[in-house]
Image (cartoon, rainbow, N blue to C red; front, side, top):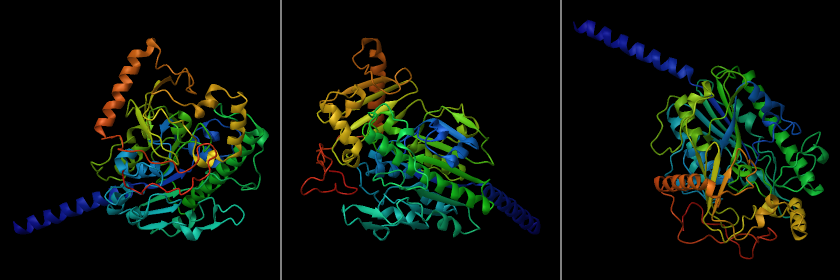
Length: 483
């Protein structure tokens, strides 16, 4: 009898071990590409025929393209902290630009690592030192990767694409483990230089979005911005080729997303779709059918639970996002009825909250006395010089002049289907009073559920709002510390 029990015990162990190995073999590798300041619409896959993006377009052809994906904040480091934790920026205690992610915050990467994944990050690192130990390897250029331009005093990256370490990182992975790679580009972030690619885009060929005036300065900068998108695309293609060379492409989920909108006035750091709508593509040839398109609302905080679910890892209670695994095989599936986004200090003080459904966007400006000043690097740009000139001459459209509006309306409501550029504020239209009340209540409830508390005091501006130049005695906000 005892012998039989032992035999059964070992048989059960063998079965369970076999199941575990089977699950392990089915777990996908994951490569997450994060573009730096790339608008959702600026690739061939999203309808821009002028920006050359053959590899991004191929990802979309061979996988699933999301048309209504949004970041939780249109600001660099808070967006990344939000992605890696699956939490809204104000819940991470890293909601202001340059605030580092506190060590007590839980990331999905350490959960993958504990479950047997080899985890690595390469490229732009904007999360702080405390997060590096969540990865097995972090290829951070850091100070060693930068040099100072003697003429301008600006910091220049030795490899300003941010992708120099992507292939070496992929090539050194252990071959006996599934892997997760966080590949963060510096493209297409400012500042721009000419001839970043072999065949540059021509200013005459770019598509000028409606929030920008069509001037030579704007076209010149958009062409350089397109160049960096193409360079990013080339680096994405190199990784795709290496995955194929290693024979792991079929079971590798590739995700492509941007941290926020294009770095031009009226886009990045705003709550309009120009700022928070993002490209999101998922390719996993083993599981996702080719050429799918989904209109489902997706937030960048949904990446963490999705990746964990696919890896067979329990989703921690700290995660505020929702898994969109169901959408990967059924593009019509819906996981949420709204997305939420926020704006906090980014070079300048501001506080804005927004909720967007499939049809409507409600924006609440908590500091309406302040103008929606663009980020400082955009404020110093030739495009912004042209905008100031046209503004003084009264030659901007209301959409283009919105960045100067002061005071701003406390509330904004837009029908994003009828008015995709969010020009006609319906907040005072009695026909939309019910919609306004519903979305106002929805945003209030979200704030209460996520403990979104007004700060006791404002963080001072770091730059001059008129020129974008540093203020005397400027100080960065205290990293990772709320006032």
